[in-house]
Length: 476
Image 1 (cartoon, rainbow, N blue to C red):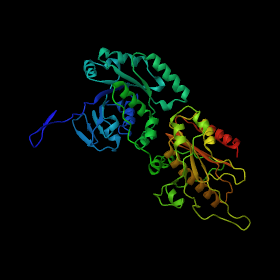
Image 2: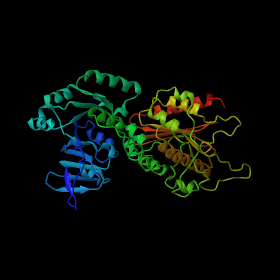
Image 3: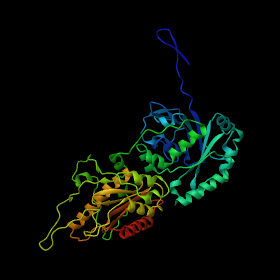
């Protein structure tokens, strides 16, 4: 393109290449909107939009982010990024624009499809103008005959560059199950798709991806982006560095969610769950105080010999967090015969034989977490230092601070009621998340968080028991 400057000279200006149009197709509720949310690092679109209106969605990149929604009555609504995604429900067409430089070469079009019979000439003609195709299939019923039939209806209108994405990969029980499913889908779609990838669409992971490249990689979206670039021959650019701060990580652990449907257990059931929303005050620190970070633990030979994965990488590279000192939430009660005595969460048994947390022990404990669903995280608190066993470091640190304060407050509550027992185990569950922890004498407080739909109370208890056994058998 040529442009005439004010002095009359003709100058050439470089026009940005047209973004490649990528069609995202699949059966109803297969995870197409979740894929867009994962790629663009946020829950911008509501779940299960295709149940009623099946809107046409276009998502791309521009410097001025925003959302435009058109409704069947012809009304047009403009929204800011971050608006409640439920506002978009009922729209017939949605245009989503975000500032995502790593996706600038692509424009994504979610094509609403239901059955093979629904695909008419207009769908086929529209597909001829598409550069690339992503087919989304659900892990629990991946690549059914109905899906193959739908794809065959497009005939030679399909673009040459295609890939299949298996959604809800985090719902599978183990890595072995994912490997088996991936192998089957690759065999059955050989010659149809150029690549096959998993999508881990847990809401907490997508939320964290907004500020964490590690969480983005954990969702599978980064691998999908890289595959798109490779298939299209587009230069691969590295995403801008993003790191989840402690304050942002803390927001991912909202205990208000669990109070609605919590099952809290210990050897002696506490009469009531204390309010931990003011935990910073209980910890004797300002609400905005950030935990101190100590030197990162060095990776051990044992951890390096394990297959490389996101959780192992996070464990070896993550800093441990020193939690703030935890004074008693209220004055402890003493009598003439026995002085008041309190023990902070994570202190363990007060004896000379202590098992110190080392990289080798963390690697062994991580082995016990392999049965946990994708996206789970785990840590251990010893002497007010929180160490990552697996998962996102910021989430582990935030959860460790919450649980440390909660265990202390529960012990205080029992003391005030004249009970001598301390809380040794705790389990909290909501419809989407389960948190469990156990105080291991002579070691510390081990804890974990995972999807309650895939991590039962029995599984969480078994993992904690296994970690306690490993900690007790480790050299002091």
